Length: 171
Image (cartoon, rainbow, N blue to C red; front, side, top):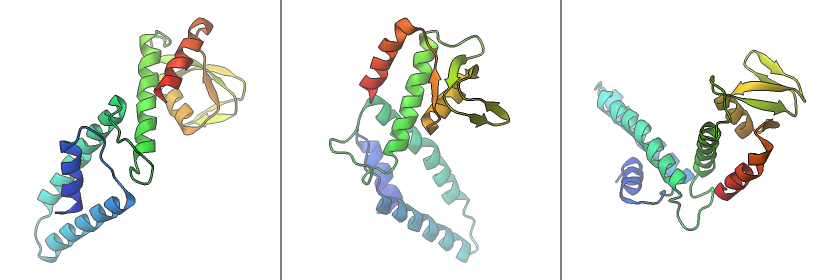
């Protein structure tokens, strides 16, 4: 059984996030390389293989992210056995913050939230100075926060402690 088959099957039959190690990724690499080499060496069309890979690329992240969001993690998880766990966890946290700010009404009609910049930040063509406050699209604010930029989303003080406790509980 190829690495791709094994990983796909493991993800589909288990309710928990399956392990995905560096060795698994290298196995996928070898499988894809072998498949493409076979097609191309015989002057065949690789269309079916490419369509299969596209389908996998479309569905596998959705399944894995949904398992992380729902907390369906294996009992003993480390970043060596699940190499995308940190990334998926950050994505899950970003989604949680997005909906938390949206449903608590912290965004304006253009989906912007007040942000205080603790350091100079350049976002696209815009430059934000340290210690300034601006309205920033919530998706950009979350991306900045997840990337490690020193910003603070300004929310009503009354709810700040409650929101912080919700975020701490999610970690």
